[in-house]
Length: 222
Image 1 (cartoon, rainbow, N blue to C red):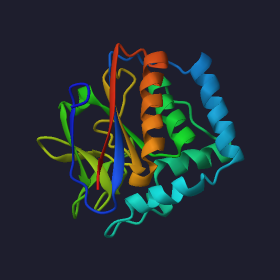
Image 2: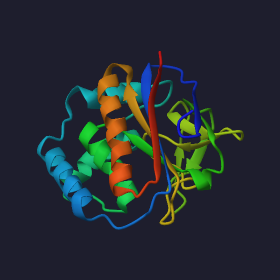
Image 3: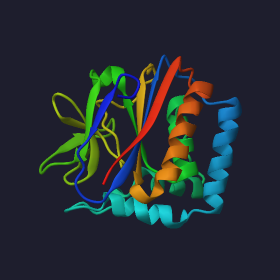
Image 4: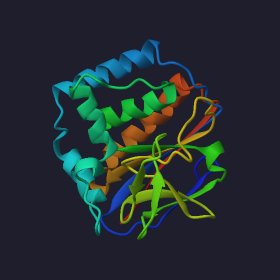
């Protein structure tokens, strides 16, 4: 349990490690001040060194399983953020989403954000997507096929709601989000990097997210 939230790990395929951050009582606001400065610095650093070293390839290897190939539109979200930084079109959404993007840029790890109120549960499972499984990921109704993709599903319905590429509209953070869960995805060999990024995320939610309580942990399954 992390902050009252249960996340089971039932992942087939390459060994991974997962950071869980649960924050409650958050306040959604426009990004400014120290958070804005930190994000500006991370964007500049990513634009100057977009390759990301061994982490980028290792994250792709974590996602590569069965029919799922982490290429094209199936690349990890962390790679899209780096590309946006390089192209000078990095988004500013709100403080909670921007904290997510800051930590992802700094670590080069993909991260999912789940609105716990909208999810309506305190129990989740990390698993691979099943045949025919998909969900809507944006306001225009586009869907992502998640067969064999690493994902987060909410229980007891076992309904996929987030993954390292695109999160579901059903549990995506709105402007009124207060209770949130972040899931950081990393190769098993990047446990130290994951631990640092998970702690950084938790501290950022306390400092810049208005959270009244924050808990975090790192779990893995070989």
